[in-house]
Image 1 (tube, rainbow, N blue to C red):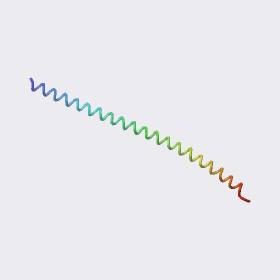
Image 2 (tube, rainbow, N blue to C red):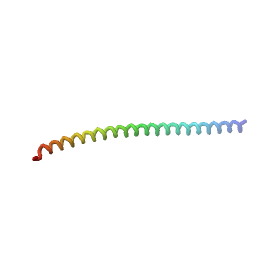
Image 3 (cartoon, rainbow, N blue to C red):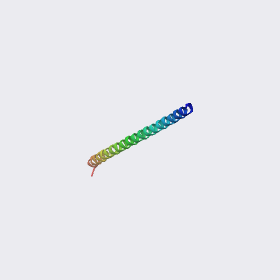
Image 4 (cartoon, rainbow, N blue to C red):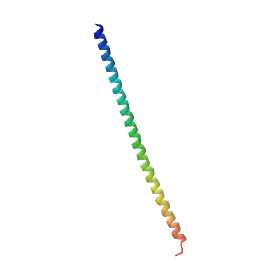
Length: 74
């Protein structure tokens, strides 16, 4: 009887270990998914900022060219 009980306890320990490993893998995958989503969101936001700044730069360049054109003798 003791031998059977020890074997059952041994199996229970392995099932608990296996369960803990599965939970850890799920958490790791979930963390990675969240990290990737955050990086994609950050990347998209940076693209928006670059587009806005590029537009501002083009507008200021036009203003500067217009001012220089007015200042130069013709």
